[in-house]
Amino acid sequence: MKIKNHISILLFFVLIGFSQYSKADYPIVSHRHLADPGSMVYNGRVYLYCSNDDENPGDDQSGYQMKSIVCVSSSDLKNWTDHGIVFEVPSGASWAGKSWAPSAIERDGKFFLYFGNGGNGIGVATANNPLGPFIDPLGKPLVENSTPGVQPAKNMWLFDPMTFIDDDGQAYMYFGGNGDNNVRVIKLNRDMISVDGPAIHLNAKNFFEASWMHKHNGTYYFSYSANPRAQMRIDYMTSTKPTSGFTYGGAVSKQPPLNDNNNHQAIFKLNGEYYQAYHNRVVARQANIPPVYKRNLCIDQFKHNASGGIDTMVNTVDGVVQLAYLSPFDRVEAETMNAQSGIYTETCKVGGMNVCNIENGDWIKIRGVDFGKKGAKKFSASVAGIVANGQIELRLGDPSGTLIGTCKVDPTGDLQTWETVTCKVEKVAGVQDLYLKFTGGEGKLFNFDWWQFSAK
Ligand code: FUB
Image 1 (cartoon, rainbow, N blue to C red):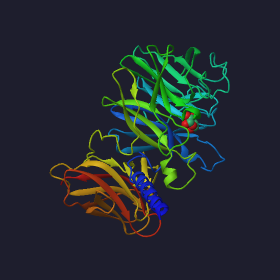
Image 2: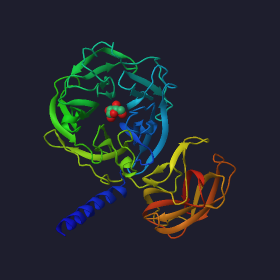
Image 3: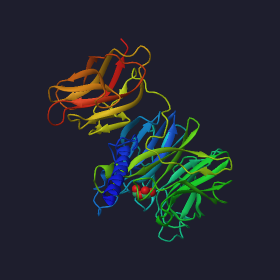
Image 4: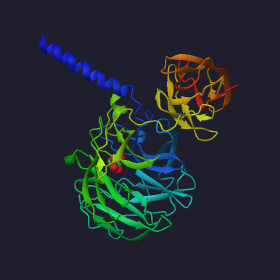
């Protein structure tokens, strides 16, 4: 009897724990498996460039096969826009067979994306805007085993590049993996696509992978994923110089919950606060698929303390505060969302991305939508479909919350022939979590490109 009671109590807590994750706002992007984020803050938005784990077969044998980089971005840290693939190999870099763990940076109005060709060299690709397409301008790796200063190195993984521009304009690229002595930093020229001098050797306790540099109050913080012996924490070292003099500082963050495997961080500052983007494996675990090669994105906030250290970050499922409410009176891309059920995204014929794979009962959630005092009267959406009697239900609070409007979707010709549908909206004002719930018959209903409310 006693044992039975204990089992029920245990089951209760397991279920509470699980339902917390199943309702979570994190993962921040749940319709795609993305990993190894590299952050770039540009014009008030954070862009995360990621390894595309959707390309991994996902079984326990096939390993990492990623050949493309996907970008997602947000200005409020709660609603994320999926920009799809911004770089892929070999079309974007003919010499490369893989594209892993990128970082991106802007200089002089140009954008630079650095990536690992698996663990066998580092490439660079450039574009005129943050969303690419990024193309390799060199026709060869930027850094390879024969680059002066890379060797000697024992079993080094030549990957995980992170590029940082110091206040004096000097650019540095940090990279390497698999051994305390395998951290390297190399100066880049102003063009950002050539190196200046040999790679410099750094040493980091328990260094495994995921080099990152940020500078705070004049101190250089080199963070990295520690090895399995050190639970793959994100550890850091500090120095007053970017290329030497580092001393171990402690942990930026622990092994993330529901991860239990490799860990990879990007650190960025937005609106005066510091955040870490990282991955765990909660989406795959919830879907009951092998999680190792199917990672997903997460984000949390952390703080530096008065003594110049970092207070170890707490991983949360909904800890980050929304930076600004979303205006429903501006056109919003359908692929901007906080959470979803059942949908996927694809390249849209008229530009950008659209939501696809929509079936009866699927939904997307948009967090913190500000309808103002007067509220909205009309809803418009751009849709494309081939079956009759589809609907977009506008609901508040949860997928079966208060219904404030229903938009009918009829065939438009095909799944990329776009028409705007409109419907009346009732009783809505103030800040709301908006659910767009899709209903209809069997199979795929329609595609969805953008939406907008109007006050008249
Ligand atoms: O995604 C492949 C590798 O896994 C990355 O290069 C490492 O940082 C680890 O996250």
